[in-house]
Image 1 (tube, rainbow, N blue to C red):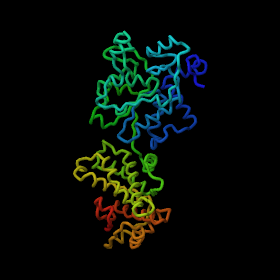
Image 2 (image 1 turned 45 degrees about the horizontal axis):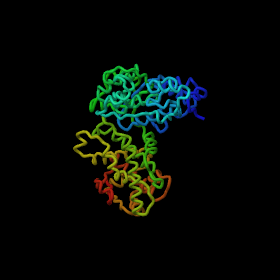
Image 3 (image 1 turned 90 degrees about the vertical axis):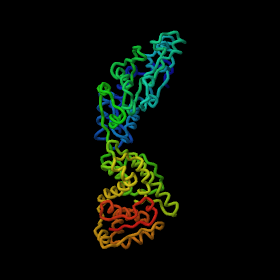
Image 4 (image 1 turned 90 degrees about the horizontal axis):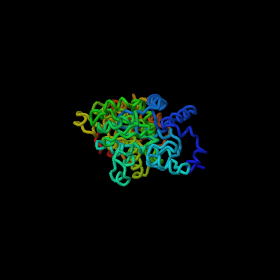
Length: 464
């Protein structure tokens, strides 16, 4: 039974828990999770040996920290998962600042405690309610974060403008006893960043020039993109100096890491079959883009590219199956159908702009197949030799059986496909065989005709 009054709380709730700051609370809960071997940040992949150890150290050190990295590196997700390090519920006075029942900081809380004493009503705040996030934008003001004088409040209460009771509190004070996160910190105007100085160190606030002592209990965490330091703004040096740890995030280092992220995030209908070579090729597109000189590497290539592309690949396979009455199995041609999921997520350099986003995206898809093919080590000498003799292969669309029959003319092609495919279903075998051809194109051992997007739905030719 949860306490409903301060008197009940004194009798049933450990006093030591009320004395803890939010950082103490997170530290103690983190230590318990480490002892039990629990996973600290569910849904975060690829950071086990890099970002997470640095995060653990910052939390154990009770530091404010900033996550620094380019787009699509799970920075916001990490910040939002910090609530799992807080208690499920904590008691508070029913005030604007969610005051500690024994040590309130707001005038409202102090008055409530003085008047009601042990009969002061207690509310319980869930861990999710203790997380406050603000996306930094250039138009964000000091009043948005800290608050502003409210002349109506001052007139109604008959207090001076410097009195706490005349203040309309901003987001940060309302995050008292919780976590306050600022996304894209560099986008804040310098004067707004300056307003955070004393909050980080002494807990002092200045509003409209009035010095006000407000000892907030807040855990401050931030994210920023290194590109923003020059593109849109920068983090002022004194503020950086007051942030305990700067933790660098990164993109997945292996295709398997990216695969786990995309599988977790992407919407894929249960009936759609996505063979492993298709999933790996989707991830390889992002890896190829992160190395391509035509793509602006300072802007980064978000993991959302792989997630969106995987969803469109599944949708393309589903569409084809509905039209042809076949089983929805993804094929390499579905990656070409997914070019719109790629082009909008690439920031191109001058050379890339000249070639066009669709040309760059198509090249990335071809290169991705070439990156993945060697993992399966198919025997392809006979296949390449067949095309070196001047032969061509045109794959008819609309019939799986006809496409497989055409592939029988290429020595070793279906045999190579069978080494990839665990299932010998015609649709899966066709996908594997087509992947072998596209992989050879990506490794520049074959040439692919009709390179435009429209050609993906018409007969396609492969030849040397």
